Image (cartoon, rainbow over all chains, first blue to last red; front, side):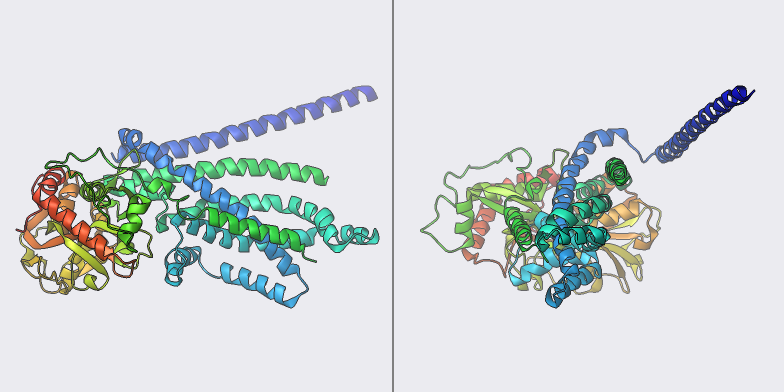
Length: 268
Length: 311
């Protein structure tokens, strides 16, 4: 009798698991279906207005898409510089020295308190008046780096502070010098904590990089805009540009999610 | 507390990278040799301006000859004067004229794509050497730029939305018109247009006309085509721009005769590097291009009519 019940119980558990899997499959199926219907429906509606011309995409698509490379170069370069700035900023924000702390705090406050577009114009149009003339691409990378560096400063600061105090104390007890503790004990753990957040910033930056089109950098949006105006096909041009930004963020979100899961695993 | 050494490394890397990304390494996609070499009628000048360059002059001309290229700005939203091509180059009347000037200088043309109001604001900070951008000479602009003689004349026309019911320019009193920011068309509406000697103002704007300005002229055509009512039912710009918009099925029609003829010139930044010699040389090149029929041929190619002579 008892054995039977146990068997029945296992059977039941298996059935529940199977049921849950089926439910998940059903959910995913519905999810994909809804997206397909919505996106497909939108495209069909738009084409029905007669404003979508596939031949136009064949002619101008490659030209617009070529801007993706510039967009990615801007983002990758800027996120690297921003990470460096953020690291410096975080040390500053955690420094017991008043001058260092104030400088870092001013940087964060000033940059986070002004629009990115103003910063872009400042670097590209403003600085030449005092003799600093930068090409659009350099100006864009500098502005984006400084802007994101400020936001990421707070991320790094939080990351460093999130490393349990015991880690530092243990290292101190072993007689490790201050710098070594930071480099060997605190930073490696902090970096692990902030990497997912950096991924988020990168995804946000992909979209913000479109602002660089206003300072004559021929990236994705710049190209879509020129072609749209020239051919009076802004709807199509913007659709394509939006699609590229969207796909880029989906790709990087996917990698970021995986990264996050890996990071979480090592926490267990 | 702060790992100073790594901080220093980071700072050094940042500065280095910014320095490396400086002029030259960037903006590669903006510059590309344009369209097929222009079919040049008339004699091909044997010696270019750079060949004849006297001893080292501390002049923009010498700088350009030495670096072997001249950087020319263009607003690529101005078909048929300047626009992008699928291969990533620029094409148009202004582009062909600029390429020809560069050829006769004996250097290559590099195009710097800029927004119209950036070009017309002056103080280019040396980002580009000259503008072949259909700029109308006005006394105000002469404060900012040094101009060559005109390389062509553009008739300014009024266009209205089809079905708007306007039959003459006089009907437009009190109407709102869409024009590009900082254009002579805006000044005409405001009643402040002064074309100086080479231009001809045929008539003043009707009483009480107001302007809705967009970044550049083509945006007006775009907005009217899209049915944006806030820009008004009237569009004032160069006749060629209107023709281009009509060819692209924009529901507008020309109204009346041209309201003024503007002389369009090559411009140099007054606040830029010393450029008196370059101005003279380019002015001579334009004179020669008038004489040997090059400009007429290019005008026929892009406008189907000869706009190089005063009306």
